[in-house]
Image (cartoon, rainbow, N blue to C red; front, side, top):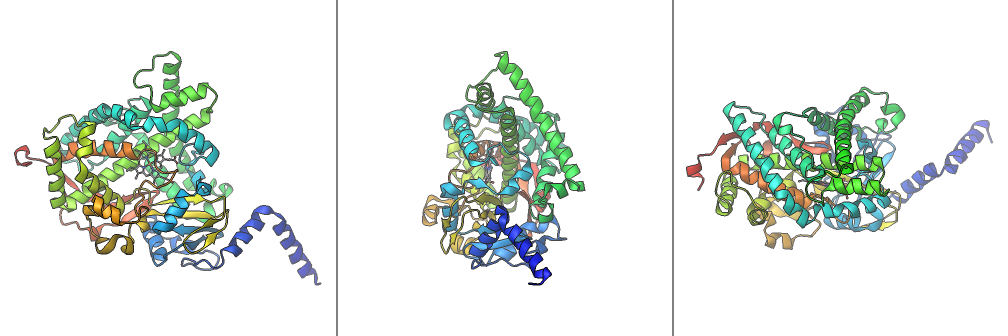
Length: 495
Ligand code: HEM
């Protein structure tokens, strides 16, 4: 043997003796027959994201994966993931008890012990403890708060119309943030009156910076990433967000200890503090759950509402139909919207669902399987990472039929829903690790939408569906959203 060959054999032997490296190559070998999404040697599909703008990422991912009708491999440099976007495979992945863990990139969100990211054993405990805070009974008690916050929104929109403020959608984000802080934390963040505004900038910036890191595999190792400018900016914004939640927890602790905590005994912060005192949760777990709730609970609903308004601005006939339904249930412009009213807004619900089909706010989610799992065409070995590509699932012509690209709320008539595969539509993910706030989101969104549409008309002069270009900054954002205009309704003409 030549000395070079000896050196190569020794290096290989050392590499193979490291379990992580051995497993990586084993996994690679077992998946060798799975189709590979477009890419180039060494960089894989990362080549397509390289030097492109973040607003193009969603389109790139769709372009390179749209021809696949089953699981396919996807490489970002040495890191590979299996992409899932057909109903049957979505069902397999999201209902398997061994695929509940999240992919490693979730650690970039620096909230390791919150529900979204927590490892399975911890997630099971947290989910069981927190589920009652989102029960129908608890949600009913939130309705007065939703109404109260929506009224302040109305006043802000009124002012925006008076001074032709085109950036009026921000008031919806302020409103949903106030709702989540008040209902889950019993805290009036008062952002609709101009307080704590830096928190918004922080959430927006963090989702953008972290969303970009996911596609830049060279930034995966912390030792490299922590030397970048992006990290410095990210850290600054995370600090702003943590400062708010830490302050809030400290205040609530004082109230809790002094037994001056008012309100509903089911609310989330009380549960968290109770479990903290009983030693069932740590300080860090409480902090991460509070951060998770604030972040997941407002941005998602506000974005969905903004996109729904955009859809209604483009489709005036559908806006009129939603308005007629609202007026038939609850006609007085600033009247209280009850829980029962929201149940009667069935067409509105179809419109929101169709909006979430076109623009699922979380366009992709990541999972990690701990056991070999049998998918439609192949068994995928344990240890594999999966990308649940929700955006693509919602745009499959064979699932949604000839009107797939149209905005067609009738996709969600009970009849049409019954004809489709039950896992064709998952804007809230599915299975055990689905969104805990789905019902909360619908009730709060219906109350806000009901109040807005009774009082204002939205338009988007000349804009069409074909003009819309959604982008992925962790959540979906549509650049053309700034084309929506708002005007006061003539009440006499509402019906
Ligand atoms: C239209 C609004 C919403 C949409 C589209 C949405 C969507 C989703 C999706 C897709 C997931 C899975 C994420 C993943 O696996 O990476 C999720 C999880 C979650 N969502 Fe939502 N969400 C919405 C509103 C809310 C609200 C209002 C809350 C809180 C009140 C909330 C709290 C959560 C939490 C805590 C999780 C993690 C659940 C778990 O793993 O047990 N979401 N959501």
